[in-house]
Image (cartoon, rainbow, N blue to C red; front, side, top):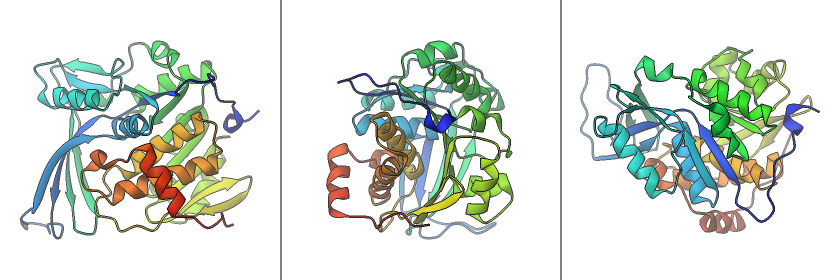
Length: 322
């Protein structure tokens, strides 16, 4: 049995419990007409602060779509001394995300991102994270996965998520990996995952090839997982055996792409936990990400389940192509 075919743990009549593990950030977003040039200045025409980070954004998406979201990640602390972390946790509590397994590191600050977003929805992101937070290991990986039906992890903090992924596999839980950060083709996280979905930038930087289809096949040499790559407004590519398939995404007018990829991963993972196939789950994820891109506010623009279902009913995608 390959890892991609590992059966889901289903609890009849209950809501799936999904643990999101990885990076948690506070985002400061500036809206500009055009990005600043070197040594130049621009005037922002809008500004907002919102939760960020792959794992945190995905957890918000899962909660809004009707799943039970748990979050595990290293943050600054303690409470009362790290304003960024306090603000993030208050917002996550309002979104009904369980933060029991978030670890606060005394004397450090929670990671912070500054995001410039132009009128077309394009973005430039600068993130600061203390190296000691990135090097943090989970205090009890087995306890974190013991309450979950499925794990979604990003690869931004590999020291933190790898023990959690290993613990999930010991429990025979499906493990979805968000390939967001440049790594190596034989990354051990790829072998622990049952599903790996890359951003196009991560796949290109990891494999050294601009051809996404070739990149997927190179990664396939190092894992039995289901693998795919999202590419903004372009088709999602995935492997079916040795064949590369193309899944179209929804046509939208983007105003804010911040958090769209994370929303896709959260929605994909929830759909898997509910028993949908990988293709069905990617369609669902594409709908969630598409709606999110039409709304300003980063993760705050993530839609609810009823909105997604109505959107998918009104916007039919063409079939998968080779």
